[in-house]
Figure 1 (cartoon, rainbow, N blue to C red):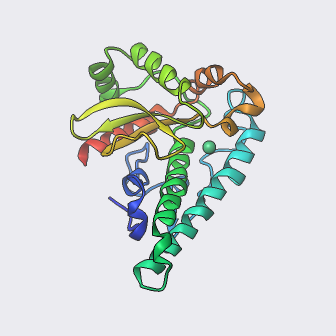
Figure 2 (tube, rainbow, N blue to C red; figure 1 turned 90 degrees about the vertical axis):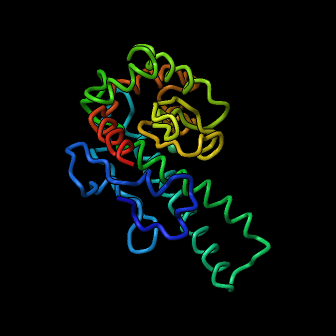
Length: 238
Ligand code: MN3
């Protein structure tokens, strides 16, 4: 079920990215998945304690990342949404429509990607994908090990800041691994992100410094494959 996002639907797939994909198969999203409420974007709580992903991802990084960085994207997305709505109602500054549309793409996508990112991780994660998702990974990449190699290589080689993403590509019905620069560039439109790793320096520099590959390798140990599998099932249903 898509959330009523209003003008926010202009964000890259944000409506479907914020769709409920609970690991228990329930229809209602968990509190940690709710990124929009009462007409504005909101910062959902983490689905676990700040120190839950230790030793792979440290508590201090999680506090800064969620409370400061993610909160900043929520503020930026709401500001852009408000400016674009005022243009739509004739009260706004039309010459700046391009600027605010770009702001919404950046902050709205940043918000949506972080909601996904937090929910893709868990303290007892890692291992391998299961069920239909495991079959789809084998079909698209040959083997789970092949997927892991590709995901780590693609995520590790993002130029500058961005994301590594495992996504459901709706035209082929298959899975693809792509990058996003910043939060919104280089996407394949129509792709529904199932799993994402944040490779902005703020996501790892305190603990891993310049060793992004070590951080991506550690991330594989906290992936919540049940959650990713539930998103895959939701994507296939359309
Ligand atoms: Mn980030």
